[in-house]
Image (cartoon, rainbow, N blue to C red; front, top):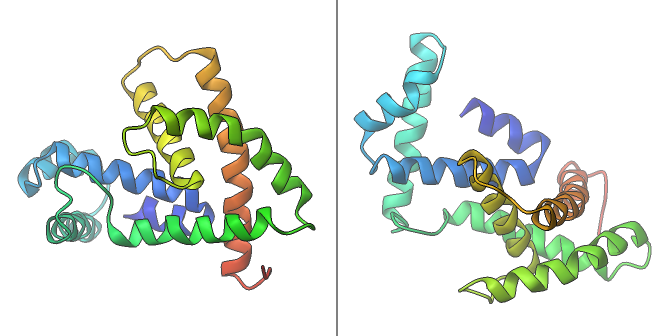
Length: 180
């Protein structure tokens, strides 16, 4: 919860990836709060008030996932809304002649986005969703200590560069420092 709040303020891309991981952790615990306590909450070093707050947060996320019927797959609607907002900003930025650097980073990422989209079973995702799915898959492979090709590592560097710039613009817009 504390990590999520901090990431939400600092880097919207890292926040989304973190929340997707939380969703998967909750699924791995079968939405059972006792299992969540043992496998996740037991690792927190905090006082009892903080522990209760974190437990309530996990319970709330679990309940939301159940109510939105995403126990097996998918993401919470508020996270999907953020992805949609990022895509809206992205579309505005690539059509803005003053954002040459952003357009360049997107142009560099676009062939990799298309290649990854073609490999996906659900290939109607927008470019931002494809990049996020690519980064999340890469993070999962690294957590599982699986081998990753150099081409994949390079692709993730390009995605990260592109999405970092988008995250920067997102926060600038959110803080009222930039208009698109």
